[in-house]
Length: 375
Image (cartoon, rainbow, N blue to C red; front, side, top):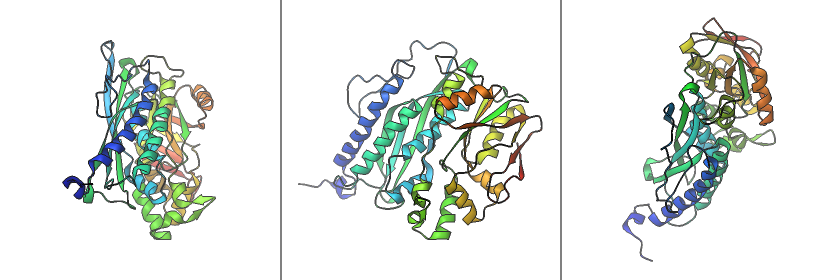
């Protein structure tokens, strides 16, 4: 068989087309998530490079749309280290879809960009693509979004990572909202409760510190270290929970009313609880007293311990067991709805007039000590 010039340069377009078809077939399964709703995908003909579109002719005048961007960050390296790729889509979609909640939006459509080093000249790496696609389908269903488009780019020597198939995954999420449902932060009032939803892993932020700590303690193959009943790598890979579908049900979707009054959401990612809560509270110039947070996941506590990270710095770097904060005057309703959805929630604190965020630490340095952060 004659090998083309492009293939000699490390890019086999036939293998790339096959990988694109795998991801497209996965994305088609997500179209069902928006059937009969705003964001329903229509495709005049079935082809991975074909047109996919959404009808918008009947939108009401108070309809608003926005778009957010994010990536799975360097957490993809952990998937590459342990050879498990079917959960990283949860991390990617959690970042772009859960951010829509902050403004009271309903995520409806996602497009992704998968940058890889090379697919090679045979089908050796297609099983990895299939794993990514498997996670794609499950995560999209959890978020209630349709994957409308995607791109695979072979980056060659520009792409670095772990193993033979390094990659980076980014996404954009289109969300919609009714004007009356948009959250600005000024809706928050003194005395509102803060209900926290539990997170069992690192989510997507703070990984530079995690990798530095574990490599220093255990060496370059730290992911193979035994931890609890698994390995340190698999424990660290624990996928992010996706809260957007639950949050939309609480606050109300584009077409339906919510089941509880919500004044704000804080998506606990980069900067941890202090930064993400402060970002939501700054417009109202209020603060929060959080005296009943969840314990950090065991792998996170272990990372804090071996890295000798103070509680103060740990709460600024990681979520410390908190995934989403819901600011509400109806905490009992929120907690009851979370229980129905199989989500662990607790009353974590309240909104205060003093513009500071006070946390009762659950870290390993000095559990129970108060930590104070500026808003």
